[in-house]
Image (cartoon, rainbow over the protein chains, first blue to last red):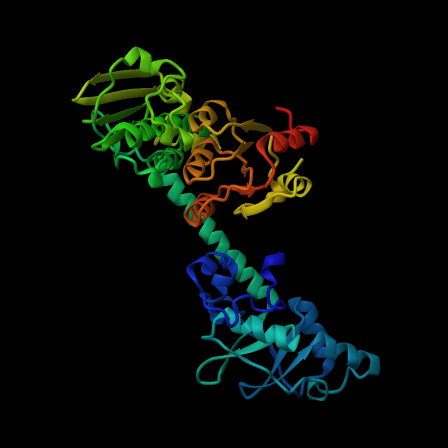
Length: 337
Length: 113
């Protein structure tokens, strides 16, 4: 709730040019204050009282409706506001029989129904008032708003955001369920450029994220992520004409194909040996070329086939078999939760 | 031991902290400058100590769900690496100390897995 009450804090972005970086740190609630309009959260059922009614009627209304302030209207026109604070003054004086007119606040600050919540927050902060009447573009009274209404409005909007994200996740994690074919799969394709260290790990990160979205368990996503990362870095380091990675996702298996038409591997058995690497000194300085890549892959996947021909290229095929309770795109994880 | 306590004790510079550091409890540690070794050895939610500072450390940390990277010996990643870490939710910390001393202090603080 701490975040919701930013009305009393100095505006963080006042007078600043909003850069992309700064915009990234605007909270969702701050953003919502500029999206939600006052008429979306205000109370529209108006409880009003006549200025000629006795103060005792205010006591009854406040008690009955469980509210803390009532709008005072005369011939459908807003003439004042009477709150518990006014009532306390009246009780001290023991004047419950006098008309509301004698105790109501007439110096009214109103809000426009079509303004954004940020205006309401600013006005609450400036005046220290607990509730404000809301008027429309024709100056007609249309509602009343409290800080509680604003908080409730934010919570509802955040809940809606959360729900939408849940629905999106749910849909992805059930992707394969309603599609009928003899064999359904999803193929992700990535092109990898030689020496593109700048984007090294991009394909594997994206594949990991896609698997998590499809409902894969985190250990499985990590395993596949590591295998793809090593294959990706091998292409970046060794495939002098670039290469490709295709990941085919089926509910019960993930097949990863990485291939290039680069220099090829002279001795595959040697290449598979932990610690053996042909990477240059320059590349080792970056922390690559530990000679662990292919070995790491063999640890992460269930099946691995490496074929290479000098001067022609290299193909690496990997398979990960998913257990019944690990399947992706069939809603297993979602239902388990 | 939470990450913000570790940062305080070791006087680490925070380069990126996209997550709430007082809520992160690293459970183990790993030290290596060879990325594939990290891939093999580092557990998830561990602290990785390295003097590598180029942008691939972010990819590795992201794939392994590493709790934080401590970059040692005053090495500083470039702006793009820092931005990438921020985007991916990876915590980057820096120190002028060398890796040996950082790990020694982490061990003293009770991080021994």
